[in-house]
Amino acid sequence: MKILLIHQNFPGQYRHLAQFLASHPEHRVVFISQRQEGSIPGVEKVLYQPRRSISPQQHHYLRESEAAVLNAQEVARVAIDLRRAGFIPDVILGHNGWGEIWYLKDIFPRALLIGYFEFFYRLHGADVGFDPADPITPDTGPRIRTKNLGNLLGLDIADLGQTPTQWQKSGYPQRYHSMINVVHEGIDTELVRPDPTARVMLGTGLGLGAGDEVVTYVARNLEPYRGFPTFMRSLPIIFASRPKARALIVGGDEVSYGSRPNGQQSFREQLMTELEGSLDLSRVHFLGKLPYSVFLKVLQVSRVHVYLTYPFVLSTSVLEAMSAGCLVVGSRTAPVEELIQGDANGLLVDFFSPEDVADRVIEALEDGRAHDAIRRNARDTILTRYDLRSVCLPAQMCLLAQAAPA
Image (tube, rainbow, N blue to C red; front, side, top):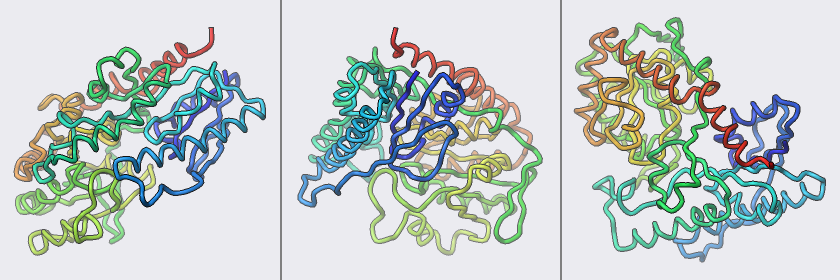
């Protein structure tokens, strides 16, 4: 089978699938992306870049749509070159979020297209209006409705859809549910597993292991959508109660979602200014963005892992934390509650309450063995529902089989 994958940030959600497909000689796998870094044996990567930036005078509702059209045009040009070179895919899989799949059916009309649909924007019931500090205005509804132009175009062009969780699927209009399949990309549980011998070496020369009081927090970027302010505000309370506790914080200082901080370079800087004098900074370790092998060790030494999120896309990192045997303190928000049942395979807290977060973290730090059953249940959840080899790859291959030519 000839398979075409598209994701601007190679390999995105297709890492495991691309590796699996490319390991079988009967498949030819071509991957279109903007990202030059990275490679997968057997996967042919073709790069593109949009030919210009969005127009400065573009209406602010339409900036994302114009950027997506520019991506889609350039991906289409790459696809035409592939067709001229004799590559006609049987199946196309691509993330719809940046417009890259929009025009491919015009070039490969017989190929069946599986779109990755991550999030449908809503005025009510999801991220918008969740934070009282960011209230809904008369502009919000029209802006959010317009943001779904790309979603609707992708849903119209795709033959099948894929989304990672039931909650994310539930956000899409009911009329599209029959075409959207809930299939997670999967967690490599053989790699991401508990390791009582793991150690993390900090730049100060300090080494931390499974016996230490380590509190971990992970996000692509440290920002309100992932509860970073609540977590930081919980630390003075935690440290006052647990004098040996340390926080390992993984993530960058950019903004993935929502607005940028007012008057500060980053939310980290903003919170450090707010908490100056009340937080022992010698016990807070900002690790930035880590190589994956080091990131796994951070999870493996964690005594308690805090994961907070708006009602939004569920981070893969929380599944990895559970697979590594972490005790997760998670926000009582819909995407997390699909994964975690409170006091069964994790602990649930109020997203906005530093005190609630601190109470559950302190409880976990007081006795390192008291929550062992919850840790085991957390890993069992991932093994049962999200294991790469036994659950998710078979489900993805079943999806491809639906799309494959007769």
